[in-house]
Image (cartoon, rainbow, N blue to C red):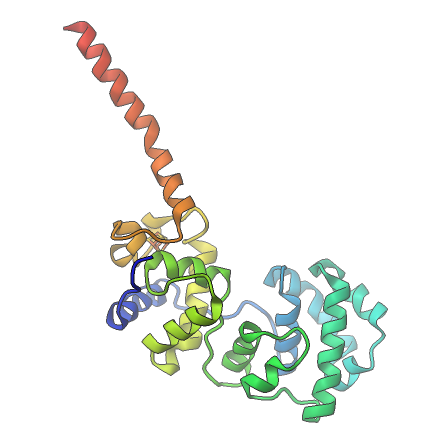
Length: 246
Ligand code: SF4
């Protein structure tokens, strides 16, 4: 695995991608830190759009931690069923609400350790809440950030925590949340499993695209190479028939 690109180049890449996605932000709809926390827990193994479909009814019935802490799990399950893993998620959001009431007077704490001590809350969820609802910079790392950062060459490896640390070390703190939103959106729209490199604002600086080193994007690279095959075969056929004509 090649060494990740230095901080200056990383910042230049993020500049270009932020220019391409000027409105990058979480796509979850929320009004309070509590709503964002619950919505982010529900978004595991689901899509933001699907979560946004269920949260209006969920928060109309259980608007805050004290209400959700007292909820009957069957009632909650029924409201969130379409997000998948609904039994486990219902347990998590009810337990988290109970812990918020017991430990934090029903408020969402603004510390990483206190957040990750709740049920169903890992660093990614905590960073989403800190960065978007509490004004404390955080760098959520999801599968999109892992894929895009490895292809670009601005971070290496598939461990979210070490990729988070690496990217945070290269960017000023005030840029963390937006940079993460930008990489996530880029991964959803452009740098998908099969990347649309011709539409990428950072392609001239991308390690994968410029071929400066092997990255974890091997499947996508294979797709790109495979796309060249017909042209190569055609070339060979043309050469053969030219030889026959001679
Ligand atoms: S150039 Fe291609 S592989 Fe590199 S970040 Fe852009 S879309 Fe992804």
